[in-house]
Length: 294
Length: 325
Image 1 (tube, chains in turn red, yellow):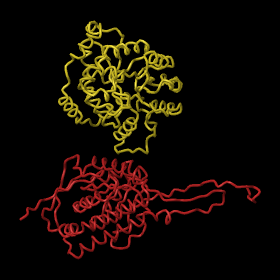
Image 2: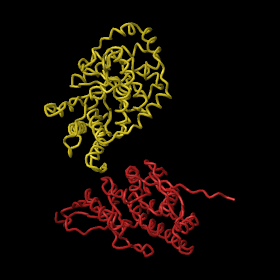
Image 3: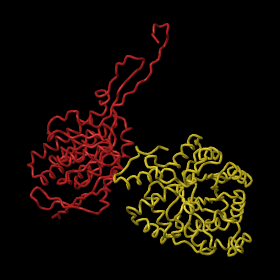
Image 4: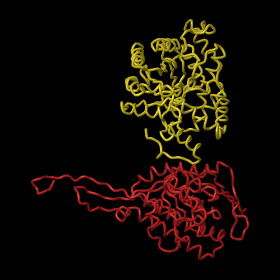
């Protein structure tokens, strides 16, 4: 006979699993409304620490080769697959979905990761270009990561939604601070355990659990956060955060309506967190005698 | 506030420095440091939370205590001029930010700093020029070479001299040699305040730090400074505690106040505030002044600036908003 141990989930910051500096927790209920687990109620200072960790993670992740980033994201998919039964059980317990729906969601999440793993080394070819210019310059444009992206994870589809907002951000070379859905922190932190064993450098993904209403405004105002993904924010909060984010001219992505995560993802999320850098390089003239005009 | 230590050994200790035997007897007779209690106290004081207006005051005080330092082989005149500009106006977005205490550089760059600082004392607090000397950072040179190093820095306009002690001689027990060198350097420094770098990372024990602190105080050092920044570990809180105890006890015994400078390894505003708490609790509130306590650092200034803005504007800042140095 085994004794059921109610798990106490922690945060995922800088590659480790700390408690909140505030010491606060909250109780998470399962689909039937009974106690499932304790989760951390993250504070403003946890958000600050997460941004500092993300800034460190960004410095290595943004410099990693696209090939390497693809391998790492593919590795996340592999690790998720190997822990699929755990996620299926968690989805059934915490969301009350049937077995088939849970399997479908986990499979879709694995597919989504493989999809984005394939994108890393194609970003420059698809979104960059060699620009035709009428002057003696070679001009080209190439995408670069925006930086530290704060994400409010969607509240429905806790695994597929989480992967669908997180993967495009790290695919582009950004680092993420993600606020997990308040009602389903267990899935997010279990996913963090997948990330922690997937060669994702420390700090590239940081996951906070707790109230988005409490934490998100601090992230939106934080000058070291470069972009904001408002997918999981309710309309009122999203509007407020857009206003706050304007103070430091952040990139803000706010989807129209409720995204359908089961559908093909498209590229808008990828593009939202890429900056296009254009370089003009003088080509000079090999020889006037060669018929060149300069 | 006395300008520089006189170099005359106070009557209470005249006997101690009469010869090397008595000096050794005195230093070896100093009470041993209890490392467990020391580290426990340092850790306990480091948890004190400083908030709101007190935090802002502490940040401003810390900025005004910074010896903004560049000690690289690759230093150029341009880098020193930039450093001076940063020291004069740490945060151009907020001109009310206090100036730093000093610019700390190699002796050959002192004229550059002097030129860049010319006239600035008329527009605000004077920024001192601190120059490392005495074959910094190893201190492995003959005494005449060290003296010449000091004299050239003072002649070029240094207000403060950061000397290193001969750690080899100290560890071998030749306290008299170390003492005589500090005395000679003090004499060569003249009116410039003398900082004696103990390089605590090489002294191995807290007992040695206590001995070296007393040795430097007896020899007339105006400051006792933890480290060169070239050896790890550099400044730590417990080591600074031992040194603060030494200047506290020195004042109690002689009535003279001397200064302390931790250097190296202090990177965040939080660290700096922890040091200020230690200064207040171990030495005393009268040490909370740039004349009596300094931070040897460079990167901490950016963090102090960012924390200052955070306090004033209510949101966190990032490295994109401060200068790179």
